[in-house]
Length: 510
Ligand code: XMP
Image (tube, rainbow, N blue to C red; front, top):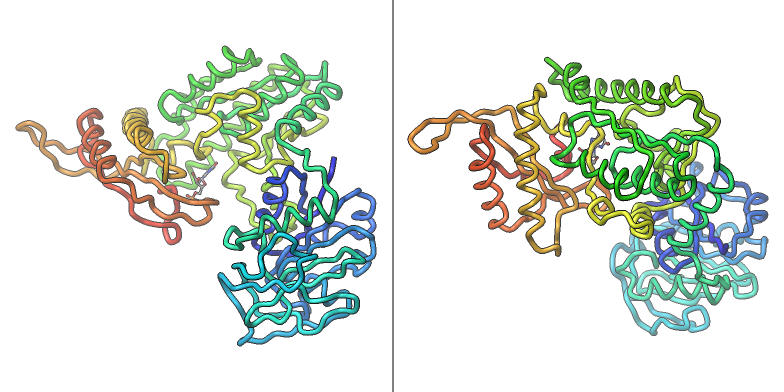
């Protein structure tokens, strides 16, 4: 399989670069620069290497550097932004910093050389974000593009197949970015472009069938996209040897637990154990209102239930997990990486002994996981499922969690989702849900005074959930949701819409 290495120097677009390469049906893998040696790179069989951008200046003592031998491996290299400057520096050129030479945003690019840019017109728009620039070229290189402020917006050494661009071809604002990447992948590196998610899924199924047949594999199925796709893939590979444990903590959305059971057990014939543990979770949550305490209790209880079920199964060979590529990249960056530990319910159980951990999706990005789910026949309802926190509705009920409040919230949330579902899919929010606040207010219904709860509706638009905008939902959707919730859900007499963005607010209320 053709492979491209994305050598990560700490840039913010490393994942985007890999995504863009994979969009061209070429497999790309990201490795952090200090986690792979030049010797290892030489042996991996990469057809090309891309140096990513990075936040530093090449002359900073702390700036990421790399063994210049990488330029002598005979593997084509494309340097982007910091990666371009690093290439120049490693090959003997000079990089300078000039405040008045900095460029940010859309910039007019003038191509001087159509050998490096055969499909880019003389003038086009590129996306720049730099202060440093290449001021003197290394020997054997020539300038192939300029901008108003940047005397070397691109350079190359054809003989050694070394290419560098100061701008960001991976960002959509660069008009011909995609073509530039395509040209590097196909004309320079000679990639075949035959990688795709469906083929990947097939290969993984064959691999696991060969390696795991006859061995028991255990998987905690949550109904989320990642664990669902991992379950289905392994089920196709080893059938009944895969045992999925689905812990229903009673804090899922309306109808969801049944949907998961129906889909996996009835539609796909997966060996599924559903544990109805709602009472157990609820009894541990009595009197608890602090959000972090709720999370901790649910995480611990989840592990306990899972361990008890596993003990009943007997010896398991492997534990399977729905880890996906962004999780792998994050942990590969070492101690400084931000790992969202609170986002994984509980972590790994430690009393189940197993010989191996299996992560069938560890090479895939989220949208590729969804594509894999579609290829495996997972219903779109589950493939397109919006993120849902592991602790479930417990963190959407402000204050103490009770059975009555869960029921109220499930109804309100289902109505809101239904009303949004009726609307246009264009500009649909990336996550939307209802929250049951602990504020009660006075209302009137018929001739009687009411004193009911206030539900809050939340809908956000986001790429990565690290930052998010509140979604400008049409008033009609809000109007219908509000009037249906107050009419159809006893106990809720007021509805408000959350217009806070993240930051400073978070997506969830707790
Ligand atoms: P916040 O509230 O941190 O949410 O802005 C960002 C994204 O993470 C989800 N989230 C969680 N997911 N366990 C999870 O599995 C959690 O404890 C948790 N808290 C927040 C949230 O739904 C949003 O998609």
